[in-house]
Image 1 (cartoon, helix red, strand yellow):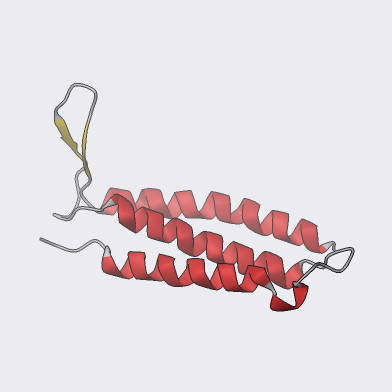
Image 2 (cartoon, helix red, strand yellow):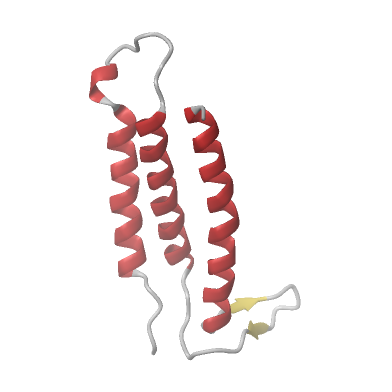
Length: 111
């Protein structure tokens, strides 16, 4: 199987799995947002709030994993300038570290 095809299928599966678990997580916790009427709307669940930074952290984490995975399987057709530094690994690792920090620091907690 072609490496690009493997990366595409991995990205496709993650784009299905992540929203599923995010929806389950949002249903388990209490989310508060202001609707178009200006009233606060609550989802039932535990007495906890999820900040947008938690979701941004989870996205950074997933994108970091995808970039590292793509770098592992990608082979350029021609030599790339400074290709020996494997820039994808560094940027993927940076996104993973930032995403893990945001997920841990802004994780949902009970008040």
